[in-house]
Length: 315
Image (cartoon, rainbow, N blue to C red; front, side):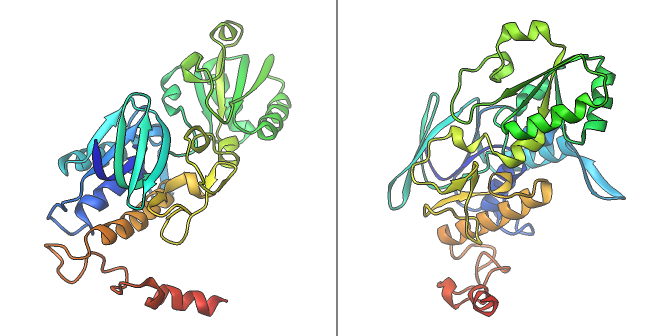
């Protein structure tokens, strides 16, 4: 299957990227003639499905509602969703084409947007045996008490974070047993809930606490995709101002390329990357003849734009 743009991941960054690519600026009503496909290995929405997003003291909203609205808009814009497909390999095969392999299909695209997040198995949070540890040890203990758990597995990507959290939890003298399991960075044999926890081990424990902090330090999602020559550090991808990686045509948005997590960074980077890609595909559109991106300069050469002038001033 061939697309103009393939997006890896159907969280807020991935879905919003597809909407911008299809519609351009939000006030447009004309659908762009850009073919977009989204590949998602698990549940649409990822972590965001389980979140209540607090933007300010008086403004918050449900993550599941956000995902539902974005998904419905993308479907109405004829974005193609490919669910239960795990991307294993992305390779640039010529100047303007990428080859994307999944567990069962092969895709090609002119551009690729990585929106794979930082945690590779968010669907495990559907289980009543799993808690996501978003806060400090005090709040985690309260959540664990509500579950009635006494024996837990601490699961995450970064060993030091897990060890520090275990020590803090032990200070409350509530838990009888805490075992640390570090998720392998590369591919691994999937076991309980697709985690690297043996099924037989779960009979000795009440539940699993996912240490979200460890994934903010060491991204476990990106290393599971083979992308030759991609520049990254601890699983976090290097990009330029327009979210493009060191591989021309390959972009990274959301939490996989930023130390800041949350909906605002997901939506802002998705918008920047998609507008940049859209301008490269269609410099002129039906509903905005003067150019697709009023927020960006109209010069064909970025070296003549205000962004580079500001860069020179910063030096």
